[in-house]
Amino acid sequence: MDETSQKKLNQILKKSLVELTENDKAFIKARRDYLKPSQLADYKFLTQTSKETVKKKHGKTQKTN
Image (spheres, rainbow, N blue to C red):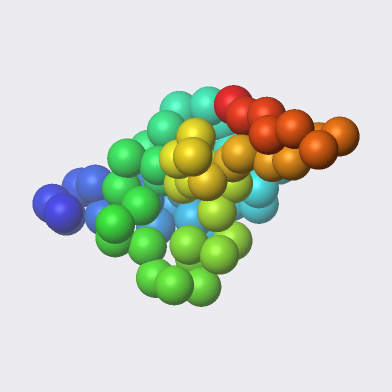
């Protein structure tokens, strides 16, 4: 990752989850390969694919996204 993007990612990761804008979330998601395992856990809701967000409800499988 280039230095400018790394600085931007570091600034975004300093924010609390409720402070993240849609652009911040998209930036994190696009760069999820650069996150540390602990960061991946914190931002898992952003980095999941639609297959990972499939949940069972009333005995039926439903996609949540």
